[in-house]
Structure formats: C-alpha cells, structure tokens
Image (tube, rainbow, N blue to C red; front, side):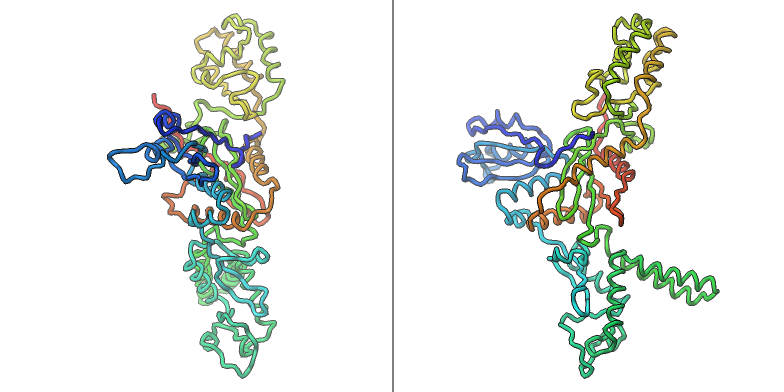
Length: 501
C-alpha cells in the first residue's frame, strides 16, 4: 500500500530558542524548504509565520543581530520557540502556510496571503431570459452554471464578448419585460440579439438559444464544433466548396473562442484535478487532490520500482534508482522461499560461506548491496513494497564465481522474484487517490476561497515558474492514471540529482 500522509499529519518539529545562545538553536535547523512559526514567551502573543526555501538561512537573518545590517528586522528578543514543517515545493509551502494562518486568524488569512476570489463566467439560467455575466462570487447552489476560474476579470470579460458573437443572447443587464412599444438596442439593430425586450422573438425561441449557449459552455464548444464540422463535411462531399469554406471559417472562429479559456476553466461543480509536486522525501512525489472546493494532500507516492527517465542525460534507458527494480507486494512466503532455496542449493551456500545464499549474493552484488537491508522487512520501512531485482544484475555480480554457483544464483533469483502483476503502479496511484478522496467535513467559505485561489495562482504562473503537473478527470469522473504515472516520472526526474562520485 502506498504511504499516505495528509497535511495535518506531516511531522512538525520544534525546538526551544534562547536569545542568549541563538547560534546553538539555529545550528539544529535544516537548510531546506520549510514553513516555520516563531512563538513568543506568552501564549497570547501572535506567532510569526512564514515560508522559505532555506530555513536555517532565513532564521539566521531574523534571529541573529548583524552589525552590517542594523535596520534588518530582528525578532530574537521576542522568540522563545521555533516550529517548522518541511515541504517539497512552493505549492505545498503555500498550502501549509494558508492552513496555519486560517487556524489562527480565520477569514483574515485571505487578506494576509492576498488570496482574492477568482473571476468566473456565470450563466444566469434561473432568469426568465438567461444571459452571461462575470462574477467573483459564484453561488454554490448554482455552481454547475459558473465556469472558471479565469486568470483575471479582463480575461473572463473577453471570453464572454467573443462567445456572444457566436449567439444571439442579450447583453443588457436590466430585468427584461417584453413590450412591443419599447425601442430595441443597438445590438438588435445589428441583428446580434434576439431582442426579447421588444418582443423581437418568442419566449420559446429565446429559450432555445439560451440552451444552445449552456450546452456550448458545458461541452467546451464541442456541441457547436461537431455540428459545424458535420455540415462542412457534407458540403464538401456535395462539391459545395464555397459553403464548405464558410463553414470551415466558423469552425476556426469557435476554436479561437475556446482558446481564450484554459483547461482549468470548467463548471465549478465539476472542477476536479490532481496536482503532482516534488516531495520533501527524496524518493516520493507529493500528490494533491482538488475536489468539491477543497484542496487535500499531500499523499506521498513512492517512486521505488519505477522506471524513471534521466532527462538530463538525454537517454531513455537510465534509472533514477541505482538499479532497475520493480515493486512487488511483500508476502510472508518470501522469507520461506529464501530458506527453501538455501536447502536446495547447498553448493551456493558453501561458495559464499553463508546460511542465506541469496541474500549473500545480493549483498555481494555491487549494484544492489546499497539497497538490501533485511530480507523480511523489505527495502524501506512503511512502504509495503519490496524490490524485484533484475536477473542480469545478479548474474553480472556473480560472474567471478564458479559455473554451478552462477546457475544457482539465477535459479534462486527467478524463484524469489516472480514477475509483478500488471497494473501494480496503477493500483498504487488509485490507492493514493482513494486516500485523498476520503470523506471529510464540509469546507467553510474561507477554505473554499483560499484553496481555489491557491490552485488558480499556481496554474496561471508563467510556464517557466510553474513547477509540477496537473491532471483533470474526464466527463465520467475517471482519472488518466497512466498519464499521471508518466507525470510522476517527469516531476521526480526534474528534481533528481545523481550522486556525485
């Protein structure tokens, strides 16, 4: 089973701080990314909470006076305790900082972190004559009609303007009361609106146009594109090339409209995403889930046994792990099979001078000796997986032994390491997603706004600054598990540093 770590269960470390001996306390801090809190002597003192890519360096500047920088903020005289939590990415640091601030300051944490509600395009379907509007506060009751989040209000308004050029929906904001004596607006004069205000159309005709707009938004333009492409192909088959060219221009126009809406723009009620980030643990990738207005995680997805491409070398055949290994479920009969192998192959035991011949051969292999720990508990405590060693690596490590010993090694390896079942990594990912999707309390309005703003802030960063990957579920709610596993490999490889020889 994949190791699971929810954000509230990540180990928080703390030490006492003595201003008279600041160097001794600061020397205990790691020089890695973390979120920290500085507490005063009294319980009612508000803590100083921050995030940093270098915990030791940041607190040395805050808690050690410097004659060279007399105007620098100094908190040494006020601090009596330091708490910190290690993080693997800036995204995780922001989430941890937000939840710490929310517990202390409540709704004021949104102002402290400058988290504003994103812009949404709302389809006002509850109105007698529906229209489109841009809003910052979509109603949870009508979340299926709110589409977003957009990077800014300007981007949302531009999307609305370009969408309305494809349909005849009204643009006015006042309440419509049909009156034939009322003069029409400029859009009705230009034939860009059905003009329900002056009874330019029937209520049924306007409802039909509103339904087309709603379907257009719900399908990300596919409802309109499919109809236009079918008409274009039919016109081309009938050798009506001018009509086909005109329909092709409309197809390109619809595609240009949806190019203004990034992939994150979806109905608020259907916004589900998995975000992969680097982890504080060197052999894991952090998995986050955004669902039902709540951002959950991280859960650590172990990369042990995965074939990780080393992108820095330009090769697709290298491994991030020291050897090519695959994860298999650890069972009690594994240790029994090892003992049976020792009984069946005494020659191998004599050659190595050990009562556990397979374990001795694994330890003698230069490529695997740093991975083998104990035959009963697996490679890493808590992972629930043990590695599958490649037979080629075993035969290479035993090439200096006699022919019989090499044969026994190959047989022992094949018996002790059956090929892992297909879909093991997919099962591991599904287990991690199930842990994240466990039922929880209904989030407050502050958590909804903060978590959505954090996702929006990270997603709309420039590509060069946005670390990690995001994946969305399909219309049936299924996750692209295989694509997510490839994303795990890319995220892990982007932060992988080969050992220095």
